[in-house]
Length: 275
Image (cartoon, rainbow, N blue to C red; front, side, top):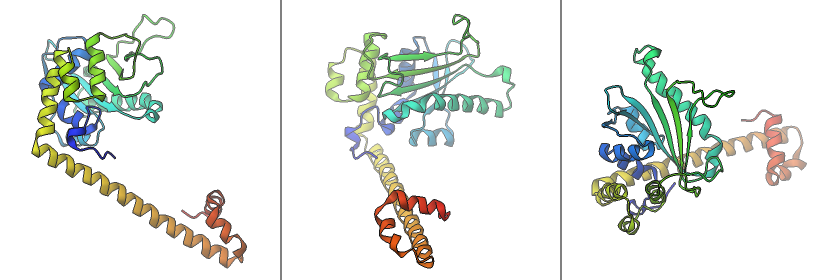
């Protein structure tokens, strides 16, 4: 849980990232930079599911049109915390499956599955090779030049990269993700950053956005406190049950150990099937 005010947020923070990337023009230019292709149009589906994804920090689902009317589907997500590096590959697989299931459930034949990209912008190095960008496609093990052709791609951007495997504008964008300030934007050479920062400033200076951010922040705090209270209640009930059993079996000499030794206490919870 963050204690930042809305003006202290960086692009790595879920709320600001969601608000900035929901601007179709800004999003279009960010995707053009990541993919190195010209994008005609970006459409953010106006569904409750997508809105929930935005505010829960679980990603942004986009329909993107290049130079034709065949929409390519993108899932873009900001990722913080090194502990997540072990689950990102499986999460990318999960998102890919969800994209395909959504298309199939809409009545489409599997042969009409759209081209799709799952993109993570990470504030840590997910694969430890110091690259700014890692791009994955399904390829033949025996012949890496032979692609499967299933039209799925997974991209991991790394703000901590130092291999210089992307151009200076992309490097500057990745630095901006963690340092989304007026000072950084004023010194930036990239026109993309200056355009993104206009939207950032609009969000940070909006009273409506500030109220929305504070409301979501309070909701998160209440949910965390509720979880703590429920945990304390469960713990108290477990301890009461265990003490009752020990007293009934005349194991009073073990009561002090139960209070002082968590490992011993947990073994007894398991022994007596106390949950």
